[in-house]
Length: 178
Length: 178
Image 1 (cartoon, each protein chain N blue to C red):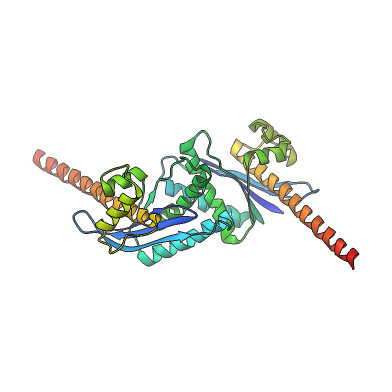
Image 2: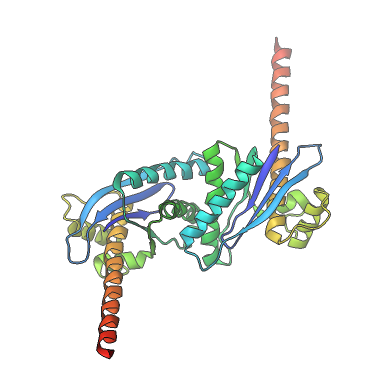
């Protein structure tokens, strides 16, 4: 399974593509950060981000897209741009008929570190270890995007395994009833 | 000047097209509401909204787009969908190179009623009067979209008039200096 993870933002949007599955080693395909200038019109910034994400979709052909779920917290002004930016990968997935998952920051942290309240350094360290990278991905947004993709491979994979196990059990039960 | 006004939302997105200018009567070209089912995937809802807005752009060929600026207030959960929905008309304008304006709810209310704290009934009543409509536009999102478009015609027009007056004065000053 190949997943595009997105840490949405207008000033910095982290993108990471990870390939792998349950029980298989994960591999980093690509990582990067899209920056759009604060001086640009907000609509222009959204369009630049869309152009970049579309290019990533074409180049890396992910089978699913995972986006960090945006919450309104401290920075109310920034959060609106982040929410608008998160619409771009959602649209990109929907337009191509790809499955889309939204993961909360604590789901992502728990997936890669085992602790839903892990700090950025811990997340970056674990992403580097899991993907067996020579150097830690920078900036934090890039590492976060990879963490989101890893979370999706593992959670998505686990969900698929559970669904498969349930299906097997139901088939076995039906066979036993006959 | 023909303006598409958008009251962004995922559950209900108001759209209104108004034509006119300063000192000229305003005319309603179209009004409507796009609804996307709450049961749909959020990415699918964004895509449906984009399809509808693209159709409106092609059918009514607005020269500019005005969108209500989204603020984080009471309903935090809803506001994220609204912020994501607002990205759609912003992208539509940027992709076509059309000017885009964001107006706050109080700017819109002040434009059409003279009172930045006017209630929905007042806004609807004034929109009906300004556009000389036989019946009040419904629901409130539709009336709001028309109010946003009216605000843009008047504010945009006024800004153009001020810019033109400044340009005239500078030309006159330069002529006087010679």
